[in-house]
Each structure stands twice: as C-alpha cells, then as structure tokens.
Image (cartoon, rainbow, N blue to C red):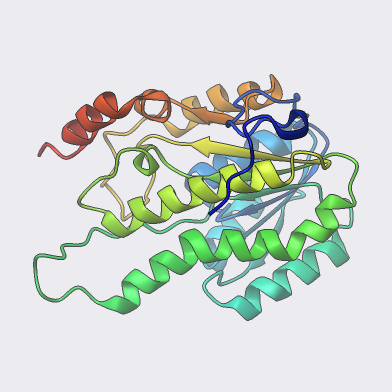
Length: 267
C-alpha cells in the first residue's frame, strides 16, 4: 500500500482540530433523532438562534411533543434503519428546504449486550449498527451533492467518548461510535477544499434516556453539555468533547487504557 507523502503539495494529513469558525445562527438544519435527549436540546438552541430546524425520528408522539414546544419546528417520522426511508428523507428535505446547509447525525441506539451469555439476538445488534453507522454514512452520501452546492455548509457527526475508550457493557454501540469517528476524520480530509465543514461532537455519558430510562442518571446534564459545546464549534473547533469525553479524545494510549479501566469498573 502506498501512502501520500507527509507534505505533498503543501497538504497536511494530520487531523486538524481547529478550522474556520462555523455560524450556527439563521441556518437550515436537519437533526436526526431530534425529538429527545441531545438532539432535542440542540434543536432548542438552534431554534432560539433563528434557525429553521427539521427533526426526524421514529416516534410520532415524541415528535408531536417537540413541535408543540417549539413553534415552527418541522418534524418528520422516519425509520433510519430502512435505506428506502433514508433516501426518501434526503429527497424530501432538499425539495422542501432547499436552503438546507447543516446536517446533524445524532440518532443513536445503545444496547447493553453480553457476548459471554447465550441469547444475544443479531436483529437487535444489526438495528444498532444500522442506526448508528449505516444511517449517517448513507445520509451523508445522499445529501452531500446538495451541501457541496451551498456556499457554507456543515456536517456534524455525534459520536461518543466511548469511541475512544469503549464500555464493555455496550460493545456494539462503542464499536459503531469508533467507526463513525474514523469516518469523520476521513470525510473531513476529503472535503477539506470544499465549502462543507465536517465537525464531530463527542458526548460523555449524558443524563438522557439513551439505552432506556434511568440508565444514565449519573451522566452530565444535557443542557449544560449543549450550552458548552456549541460556542466551541462557533470558535472554530472541529472536534469537541465535554468532561470525561474531552479527556478521552485527547488522551494518549496509557491514559486511554486507564480511562477504559475506569469506565468498566462496576459502579
């Protein structure tokens, strides 16, 4: 395998964590999984900044609650595990909102799985992989021609601190987030000369219903998390964590091993 030289034609192949500032006011934004948790908190902040916000999710009741709380919010029921529904979403959002210039891939599923105990079902694992990894990659591919035609656009991939130091109780989730982090690095490099910025939001454990109600009550408050990270994107950072995920994304191998041991120590 041949690798490009370290400084061919002045290019830099090392990950750059500081880029151009990103304006997050008065944009047109699609947020997947935007009816609850981190997605809803992002929708609230961006709506308050004068953005046109479109959120999609699987549950019509949650979407209706979000729309009632945020007048002017656009909501669509969409099952992101279905490639046909992803394709329909991409066509519809571009047709109805041709100003679309920010896409936030936030939808995610976390299952607690034991491979050392018989009974783990592939169907649940496949749904987790499809939601967390297939959907953001496929939607990026579908929406990228439109975003490349916009003068200033952004793709935000929501990964996890578990992309850097996995939780053994959620092995598939951790693996999908590590893969999405890897994809984000490659996509950022490929699009470095275009109008599309590629950003990564790296949450720690946040007090949401991810994985089921009550499982993340020990996590960081969702409002404090979102309020802290958005200004950092606007200041030019392209990869942003918070609390332990901030330490994890910047850690060396010894620190990552220590973080892995801490995450996987029974509470």
